[in-house]
Structures are given as C-alpha cells and as structure tokens.
Length: 257
Image (cartoon, rainbow, N blue to C red; front, side, top):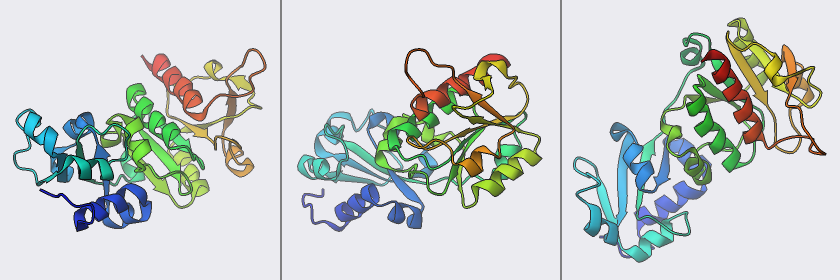
C-alpha cells in the first residue's frame, strides 16, 4: 500500500492529471469514479488506484481480477484526486486513436466540427450528447481544449470511451475532405439565413461550432454550405456552445427517426 505523497507513482498520477503534454506523450489518461471505472473497456485499463477504504468495502463488487491494482491510503488518494469528494478509485486508461476515414465509413455521417472550443465542461457535454444523438464522430481543431482534461472526462459520463473523435492540424483542409464525401456543412451562426429546423438533415451533415466567446472565425464560417441560426426570444443573442450543439444534434436525430 502506498502511504506517502512523495511516492513516484503518486507524482506520476499528478502529472497525468495536470498536464496534457504528459498524457499525450504516453497515450494515456486518467479517469476517476466508480462509474467511469466500471464503463472503461477492460483491455484499455493499464492500472487501477484504489483507496484503502473502498478496497476493503467493495473489492468483490468492483471485480478487480486480472487488473494491475495499487492500494493508496485514504490520505494519499485524496491528495491525487481531482475532485472535492473522491469516490476512492482512479484508473489509467490507454487513449484510442480514430482516423477520419473510419468516421467517413458510416452511412449518412452526422458530424460535429469544433473550432477553438475552450471550456472543458462544454466539450464533455458535447461528447456525451453526441453519443445520445447518434453522432458519427467529432472533429476538433488543434487549439481546442484537451478532451482528456479531467473536467472534460467527468462531463462525458463515460461517452469518452465510445464516441469517435480526432484532433486535426488543419481544420480548413479537413472540412474540404468532409465536403468531398458529399456531407453538407452547416455553420451555427448568428447571421444564419434559415432557422436550424428549416433544413433537411436526412443525408450526410456536419455542424461547425465556434469558440464560446467569439463564435466561428470568418475563414471557417465561410467554408460552410449554409449558415443556420437558432431563433431567440427576449434579449438573448446566443446560447452556450454545448446547448446550441445539443439542439442541432437532436434535430438531426428527430428528422432521421
């Protein structure tokens, strides 16, 4: 059992929690909580860290057989946890790489394309909603927040394991590739010509979603085939990026039902 916060594995866990560079260099990330552990693909779990109390209470229920397990004292576990009320279990999981071609293989692709999204909670909510709405995949510009940020991971509620996604170096070039697949590209934009529910999304479609504060850059917005808007009441100009994305995703889902 690890009882010291100066232990090498404890230091490594803290690095993985805090630094995206370390996570990406090693192609791993950290998930925390019982639900996130139970939903993690067993073949991608590298190691499990569990508090002494939880191990003594639930080691049978958690089915740890066949996994590398390290027990931490409750004090040390609280030290490495990224949450205010730790549940007592953390695990290191291997990242899964998705290629653009894999997303294109899906019939009538339904894509979300995110430019410079910065809020971890927004990204996590989009990932979770995307799974629920049957989205084929998520494409992120290289300057988007790290999807393996602990706050993003928690917001996905397990969808991180199942939702295909990839970061791209050149978003403009990638959008061109999307259009070559006969996927219609829509920009969620305040100056949209039509309301979002006036379009037909039954064939391949992709939505461009911009930065929380500034929206889409002009260069990316101009690559869309059509600009659409979500009509507002009152004095509200726009919606949170995750909320707007959810409305659009589920409109596609509704039309294809």
